[in-house]
Image 1 (cartoon, rainbow, N blue to C red):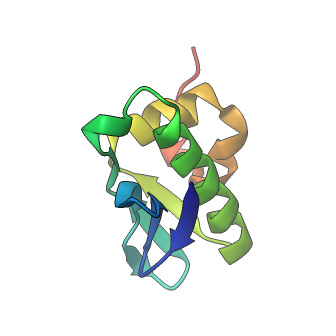
Image 2: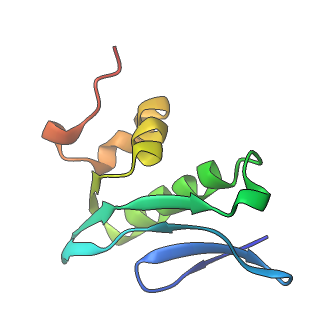
Length: 98
């Protein structure tokens, strides 16, 4: 599987299927993006691809020095499950882990 960053999204694909999944994150300013959605094609669900997309997004957002706003419920769940991701969130947006 290949992951490609293109125009405020990361796309998972393979030679036989150009869109296995994606995470979309439009910019709201030069240093802030909003995670709108994580999508995985139904044929590929249940294989951990969505979690891989979020992980790759987190790595990319750190490289870009972005702060992140979460709108996608799946991304919110991943940020709650992985507290180390929350450094990308503004303090007021951090998810209560209790």
